[in-house]
Image: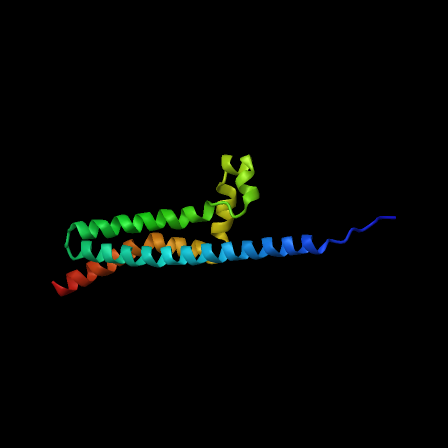
Amino acid sequence: MTVQRELSPEEKRLIEREFTARQEAAAQQRHFCRAVFFAGIASGIVAAALRSFHVLTVIGAGFGVCWLVCAVIYVGAQILPSTFAKDMDIRWHMNPWPESLRSLFAGRTIAEAIALLAAPTVAKFIFAFLYLGLK
């Protein structure tokens, strides 16, 4: 005969609060990643346009650096610990990559990461053809 223990109301509230906090943290991380994604796409396209039209300025280089920073932040944001328990686990700090790859491959993030990395190259080809067509 096994005795099943019921959760106390305080324990239930604590579990609900932790679940709500996790959901809010995940929503904030998705919102941040989405903003970084759009900023990276825009800066990569602008940098490719300036380079393709042979407008070599500090601004073009700045947009290129901004694109690179956005790509690193977008991929790097996928390896941050989502809970305090993972932050306390030494195994996670020794090798965070399996979890980061799982979170990167989950949903649309892998397609967005590929689009973020490929956008400047594709835009450079398109703008090069436009430049040659206008010339």
